[in-house]
Image (cartoon, rainbow, N blue to C red):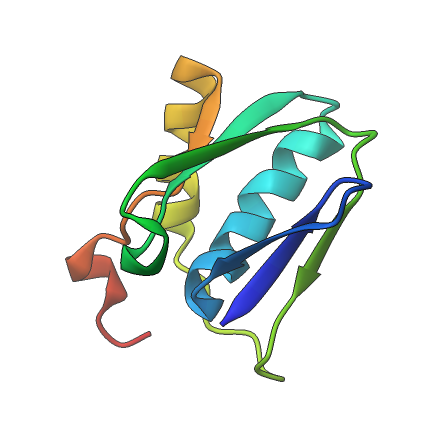
Length: 105
């Protein structure tokens, strides 16, 4: 598992390694443009299958921590899909990776 540590309160949010690698590219792309936005994801069974969101702003500290040493091959279509939805709704949502794009990754 990989961890996104958010804000001065050090909220730790766990994601699968592959998900966080793609999310990192999308988040940093928006922050480089000085955009503020919400980040939303679905919780897993251990936390009750709910949904969570945090507000991201260029001034909020973030730390992306990966357990694996190598970076997975990135699926640009998946990143673009998340960024497109974020542009329309003002919310970056963790979407499932399209199956046809995932093969061979």
